[in-house]
Structure formats: C-alpha cells, structure tokens
Length: 287
Image (cartoon, rainbow, N blue to C red):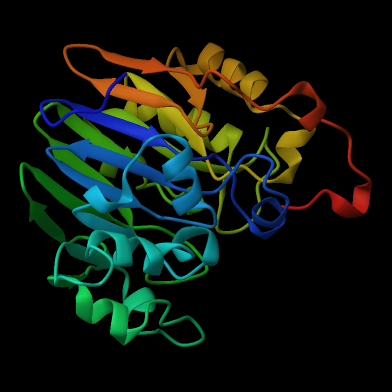
C-alpha cells in the first residue's frame, strides 16, 4: 500500500514494549505513523528514525510528533524526529503534542524533550486526558489511563474515514471501553499474554474483554513484552479473534492499515523468524 494524502492509513514500526523488549529488540519499538492529509508519528520509541527509513516513511514529511508519556519506549526518538520535522532545525515547523511529564516534568518523570527542541516546533501542545486538539482534517482526543506515569493519555483520533483508538499503556478498568466505542481500528498495548496481567498494563485476556465491548473492525496489538516469545503474537492474535470475532493482528514493523469503506491491512513481507520464539531462561522472561 502506498501512503498518500487522500486516504487514511496507519504504518506500524514495531509491536514491542517494556524495558527488556526495548533492549532485546525482538519486535521493534518505533511506534506508529498516521497519514490522513497530515502526517503524525505517535510514541516514537527506540529505533523510530531508523525504522522509518527502512519502511520508506520520510521523517522530513512529518507534521506532528506525539509522545504520550515519559517512558523511553514512547519518547526516545522524539527529539531527532522533531529535528526532521523542522527540516534539520532550520524552520519553526510542525506540532509537538505531549503529556505533562514529557513536556514539563511531573514528579520523578521528565521532562523528556529539551526546551531547545520544544522551541523549534511551531506549536507545542500539552494535553491531559479528556482534552482534544484539531490538526488538519483530524481531531485528536485524549483518553484516560491507569499507568505508572499519572499523566499518560490514550488517543481517540477522529478522521474522515472513521475513528482510530489507541489504549496506550494502561491496566484494565471498568470505564476503559466506553472511551473507544465507535472505533473502526483499536490499537491496544498488550504487554503480557493470556491472563498474565501485571499492574499498569493490559494482558491478552483484558483485550478480549475490551474487544467484546468496543467491537472494532480491526484490533492491532502493540507493546508486547518478553513473554510473547513463549506465546507467539500470531497465536495470541488468533485466540483473541476466536474469542471476540474481531480481526486481530500484531503490529509488526511494516504492517500497513488502510481505512476506507472497509478496513484493510497488509502484513509486512518479512516477519520475525520462528527462531525468535524460543524458550528463554527463566531469569530472562520479563515484561
């Protein structure tokens, strides 16, 4: 799929998350891009710049960078993408959207982006859950989370082709689903497989509960930790689809999703090899 200005498309740059996966890089951690007239990079974690080039996504064409909270797997490459967005820091250009922790600092978190880099964006927007910002033909609405960084927000992106939801890092809570009702695509950060939940994060069984309430056309799994090496993402995605009836795919680097009359997706031509899914020593099996 070629990304153009007349369509709404998503390009994923990895489905890994958590500090162990970030360092191991089995699933890549570059976040994802939305192209809907404007070009937005959401949560550019480690490798976002390199992965952009590898998947023919021009960082110089960015109109907006979004960093939803102050953990490195969500902001690590933000500054270099700001440098790209501002044409090598030669122009005040583009929009930087971030949480309070990312932009100003909150307690032990942040700030994660320097005043120098913030000053090069044409506009800097600090958002909290329940707020919104309009950019071109889209409206970015923020949703609440329950995560270690208390300023973390999820996203509900309203485009001309429908709503894209992004849970971000959060543990499951009763009101979570209502914030994503109407989403055609739901991007969910699922840190652990099966029912192996930990505080502040979703597990696969939490996603099943969420999808049974939201009923999107497509679910994309991101932010998968090391335990997904024992429980391969494709297998978990198939289990989730069977339980919910919702088409579910891992957001491997290279996955493209097109929103039109139907939601279509194209898997990357090269996916992680079977050798990636090995039984690691117990002391290495972490989030």
